[in-house]
Image (tube, rainbow, N blue to C red; front, top):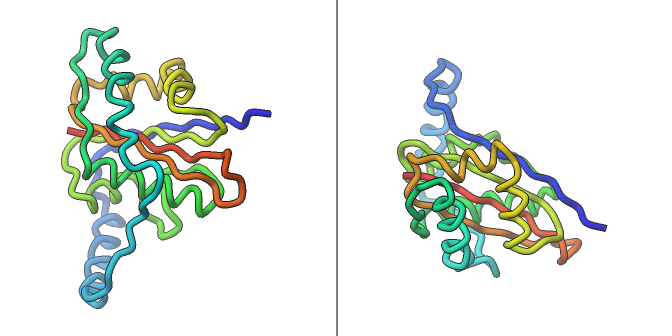
Length: 172
């Protein structure tokens, strides 16, 4: 049996009062915990962005677009989200701490337009891109001409090593 779930997200800039108040609260909290060390996920998916560069280049070339460059900073953001999803056992564009995609990319120093494709399933990278290229929202993200860089990561589910949580982050 193959488990397949996919989702995509494109950040839309907004500065609502709630967002500003949340940012102020998080800023105050960060000041209180400034000496704490953040734990960043690592794992077997390190370097998977480089192996996906050719596949993404082919997808974009079919639409007359240039290739995307693998970016370590963006790959770290993708790995963080893949790790969060694997730990939680479900796909989601937000974290358990209420961080949405826009907050996560900003926290990772990624400025400007960005998008995220996520997936959960028992499939390899080639099948992953085949699924995304046939999904209008995911395809739109991969073909967005604003993007020049990307990071791809996956983390295996701790209870089922054949199940992977994938995250592709695209940015400028």
